Length: 114
Image 1 (cartoon, rainbow, N blue to C red):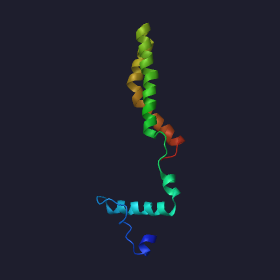
Image 2 (cartoon, one colour):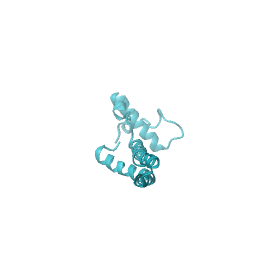
Image 3 (cartoon, rainbow, N blue to C red):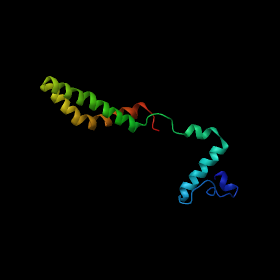
Image 4 (cartoon, rainbow, N blue to C red):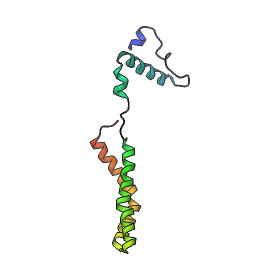
């Protein structure tokens, strides 16, 4: 049994919004009790101020598109080199599709899930 159940208190009564489901209210009550018991709890479970995995994946896709797509395409157009035009066209077409999932796989192995 939970500590709130033994004392006869309603764990859903404090710090809740009326539109929440009973499970959400219980969860909020548990988190509130943990926060009162240990003030450092909220600081430990709060979200760190760093880039999320999705943001890193989008940034990597943009950088890959610029480096492998736009830059070779621009240089290929300027110098009229078919090889750079081809690399640029392929980079623009497939870079944003291939790079983010690859970065996601790397991040899932390097970073813990948060």
